[in-house]
Length: 283
Length: 130
Image (cartoon, rainbow over all chains, first blue to last red; front, side, top):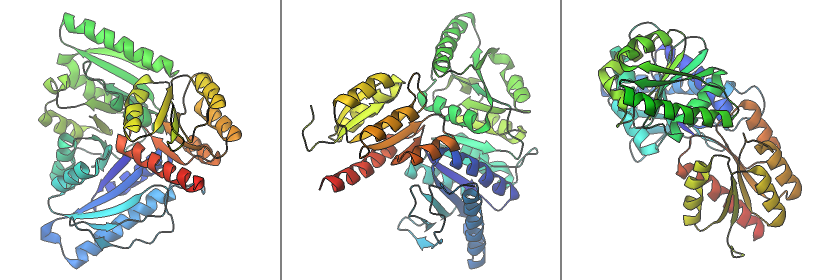
């Protein structure tokens, strides 16, 4: 698994480093911690501050390993170098897996999306405030990344671990890739799994029930017993809002998703902003 | 059957979709691949034939991946092993490496990540053969 951790200078980015640390301990993922300098603030001082922050977040991830079995090179010294494609990078190699630091210059959301596209990462982890709204350019950065990325995005809020991972899946497009991402988060948090199907007509209900049955078989084969629930499309927003009070909500938002009808981009942005819990957007 | 120069890979995952995706991608790279969805069948085959590399899932019915890789390392310690897992934990990662696996890939991963891990294993196998 390849993960990009997008950070800024706000305290919630320290929290996201702790969360990724937990994920790293389990998955031994290749990780890139990424910060972006706005062209307006690209001074030597600002760059140095961001470099120090990224080094600090790297240390937080490394400190998650309490035993000596760490796949990253713990002793590597961060040597910043300019790459041909314009990034400032500290590739702390020498370990089994990569834990590298990258600084881009430009508009934060665009740079994160571009880096993700080129690195073909599986997951972007980004954070914003636990309270309503988000400080990162008034929330524009996490929302834009979450709604426009081509891979899955986990928006982390500073809350306690979820009791349940509630997955709202498009009955036509339940991908193996999505299920695998969900399974890792269920394992990470030791959470229960609830799978939600969405209906808006009788004929659709049959399709959903069939798909839910297949999912139940998939999980039963893995000796897991998820909760299953079918929710009417019209009540979906209020259902999601209620679930997000203490659970991690995962929405499948691929380009052809049936869920786009109930959750267009604008509504997803508001949902992420208002959700007191973390949100996973699956693709 | 593969030639003596060819790298022989045993692929074990109880989800058929995984083998369906990985097997042709590895074969296109020139490797000889046999895939299994039941660990007991994979183990029987491992007793019959020599494999340079084993790619195995962990969570499986019957003999689980950890037991399987322990057996593989006991029978043929030189066999390289890559673990793939959909339910990664600190304990499984740690135990895998204590058993001497070469790499540990948490699902989901892209084909490129697996191909890179296999290339690393192949390099090590060829260095040993030379």
